[in-house]
Length: 90
Picture 1 (cartoon, rainbow, N blue to C red):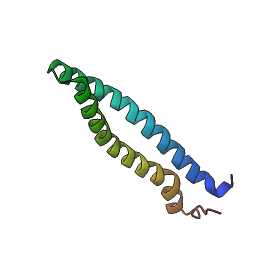
Picture 2: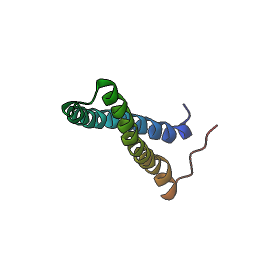
Picture 3: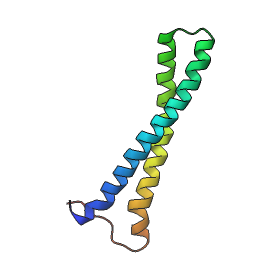
């Protein structure tokens, strides 16, 4: 890997790691709470699965967006603003 591609790789890696692990953990917690409430209310399992999928998708969107914004700002934009030359792709 060329030296100039390292900021992009770091940005992608941390975005992927934080969005996947953070989104997964938050999804498990919220999904368990939501499933418990819906199950106690007598909602069918297939409906709980569908509702859980939709809520998980809606929760994952802002996690993904803000993690991407943070990783690009930290590893690509900030060094450029501090005077370093922008990373060049081959």
